[in-house]
Length: 479
Image 1 (tube, rainbow, N blue to C red):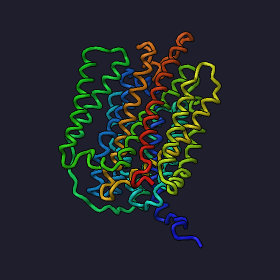
Image 2: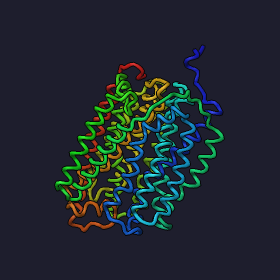
Image 3: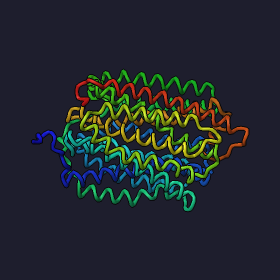
Image 4: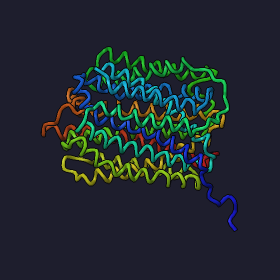
């Protein structure tokens, strides 16, 4: 006779509807991350923008989400995670519409900040909403389906980015979010129920400011350095960034309600899971960007043709996500999460061997391996974080998870440009990276070597993530 513990637990009707709403939110966020990278050259050309401004169309959005993630989680704990999650949709819709009608690059960057505020409200609370909605036995499965939403959004972003920039105005890469966001908002109002026990929280403004100054100073220094401006201002910005980040660590130790609660790091599983998330994002976020630049800059493909080579990886990754989630529910998170990171490292190693005559099938193979690895890692690692977290601080921990991942994403982009620029003529790197120029044959190998160096740096980051993931073996709450 089958024991109760072996009977499969099924999702209720409400849980299925709630997951649909959450998947829609993840999808719209994922669309925006990939679609902007593909449309960036056309966008900047239309606005007659400076190349340095093009970089901040991406970085401003990521930076705002990073800074607000933990604070938004606190607001969710105070006023209800579902309510804040829904409010995020409204801000995101407004920000998307404003980006779509921006008249110049300065307004576009400002409206991207507005969009980032809405994205922070959605992303920082989505993990906590799942944790509130699903019991621990179903969370791995729920996070697995969540990865489907991300992969579907990434696929749509890649395809729509190529199609829209080729056949329509770049403005539709933002305006397309409006109807999707309205649908998700209405659905959330009708379906989601707030089960949050309200908790009194205070905001950590000192922590947010010092973290913001630290990241901003570091990013400005890295982008100036990569463009050849290695001067006193660059050194000063780097110094300010380092001092601010050190100040952030000390400030968090003294705050009664810090943005990063040091006490939570006493839970080893949580510590290693957050570190794995950080290094995975640091090593992986720039990969799509580097690949697109290789396919366009070195191989001369159009944005649409380049992106089509990567679609199979996202599709297979979306299939692998729920399977890995079920697997982690049965055997624990360590094996699937660590295996996923190692697969991603293998994929990046394949990318690091690309040259001017590599068959495009190799690119597709690397994309598939990378997609499977991502599908294994994300649901398992997310489940580990939320399972290790006390129920009363789901919002804070969900925000911390997004903060660590977002810091990695912000630095990954800058790191890739900086490392690649060490091998590429300084004046050329930005022009190629944003697609505003093509390479002469004699420069192709040089640019290819610069991309290789960036890929090898990404492999090192992925190896550190795998070490952090494997360190959870045998720890409490890891299974």
